[in-house]
Image (cartoon, rainbow, N blue to C red; front, top):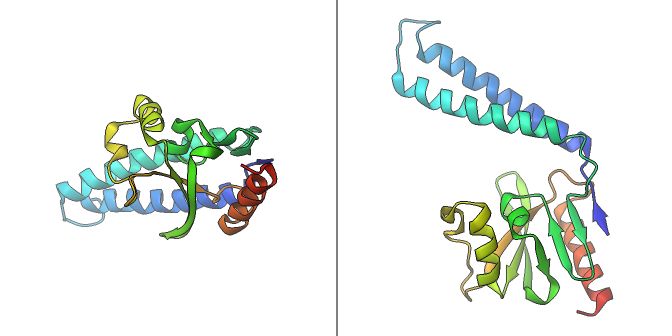
Length: 174
């Protein structure tokens, strides 16, 4: 079972980023004294950093909007997800390693949290591809690794996606 990118949802996210980018440009211009006699170096630095980051995010989003590969793929062996950097770096998340599922609200998004029991092998994979700093605070009270999935760019909502993941896993009898 595969879940693909919803271009309408992706376009909405890109438009939100463009709106924030315009706001940051206005802050940069105001902080540099274009609209007034105010010169604020901290405002210039912070808005410039946000402009660069948002520029990269928007560019990458525009380049990937026509990508035809699935964002989330449910396979007999496990889940392959490309929806967050950590899930992408983890690669195949085996069904037998997933001990719990949870929906959490984070900002305007609802995330599916996968609690992974065999955390050390996944940590090794993730730290090879991402900074070790990303791994801070990613374990639950039982020492399980938590990997988050978002449905913000897929065809369904997070609660529906979680239901489909659980139904697929139950059909496999893992």
